[in-house]
Image 1 (tube, rainbow, N blue to C red):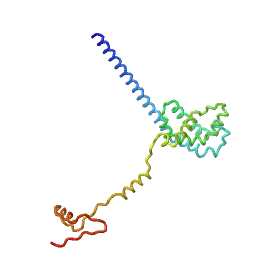
Image 2 (image 1 turned 90 degrees about the vertical axis):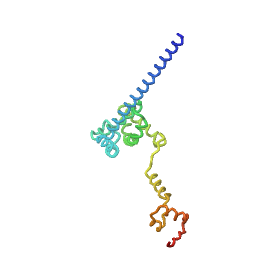
Image 3 (image 1 turned 90 degrees about the horizontal axis):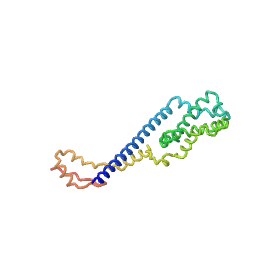
Image 4 (image 1 turned 180 degrees about the horizontal axis):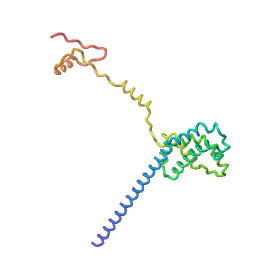
Amino acid sequence: MTLALNLFGILLSVAALSTSTVLLLRQTVFMRHANEISVSVTMYQEYRSVEFQAAQDYVLYSLAGSFDPVMGLSHLPSEARIPSSKVAAYYNSLGTLVTLGLIDERFAVSLLGIGANRTWNMLEPYIFQEREIRVDRDVWAFYEDFVCRARQNLPLADSYGLKFKRVADDKQSDLGAQKTTSVPAREPAFVNRVRNPVVVALIMRSLGPLSCGTSRPTPGPG
């Protein structure tokens, strides 16, 4: 009896310990997700800011036509260096967070991967020259890593199993539905003048089904 009670007590202790461990793990995962969401929202808010969008537009549409990549980034005039460095630093920070697992890669690539890839295409010769100037091949390395992740996972539908709805598909479905929708048969005009539903039912039954190309006889008076 004593042995059974001891075993029962041990089992209760193990169950309590297991439950506590599971709850702790779930709480840890929840806190991690909460922190990840907070960081993701902060990064996206910065991306949407007027200052960053202006800097990104400069990199995409003005930098290459104004200054030679031989200057790298650090030797550019301030009007070019500040926006270019801002863009590179942003995507480098984003790449760092993705690499360390602080932001979900699918979220980052889906939302910001295309922008990172487009700006990298413009900044690449400047960044490579900057590495030569600093004698450091890891300058903006997290930026480059994030761009590689984006390129490996584009198009998104193939890599992440996403299925996008298309407006064209919806229009085709609506058009098909309109073509296949049956039009209810219209009753003869003389039936519409009869108010008693029982009489209407008897008239329609006596006339039988109406086929295309045929006409129902109009009953005579009486």
